[in-house]
Image (tube, rainbow, N blue to C red):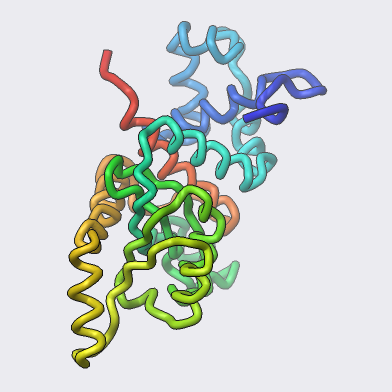
Length: 255
């Protein structure tokens, strides 16, 4: 992760140690206090992270580091985790939702939180099932707005994008075609033109779009379908971390 993964100027734990600790916390579902207790019981892990088992960091150290590391750090982790897998250039574009009602009702009413889910739009490789990129929003941004945004960020690595009719928009089709990417999207309706187009894109691999649903199901079953963080920006980072962990676990082996 470049210079941002080295030892901080002020001393203390290296940045990669914080990132690994957050991966352990999220993968096991620990609180910050439980994370410190668990790490202190794993001397080999402490040695790799530069943590002394008898004097572990305070839980607040990891809590504030999740705030301190901006979104591009977690996006870099997601990108690097995806690059460990072979990529076909053929991806599925789809959206899913994560629950964010984990705080108490008193807290929700006090802070005025009335949005119950966070929407995540992803690009999933149809062969390796790794998530290449994620776009998060709370204000229910329409698929035709969020979809092209994710595709533009990864245009150099894509050959074909398959999406359902929620992403069907003439402006999006022209924009993605101008990037040299084949856009396999179902048309709405049963007109002759729509029927012919849908039959054509099915013959080009549109049916692999369901791979994104498999990826969502794996993440929510093996990790969590609800977000534990209270603040929206931490929830966005939590979603990116969930998909990065899913990519990493595909490369891991049980000892």
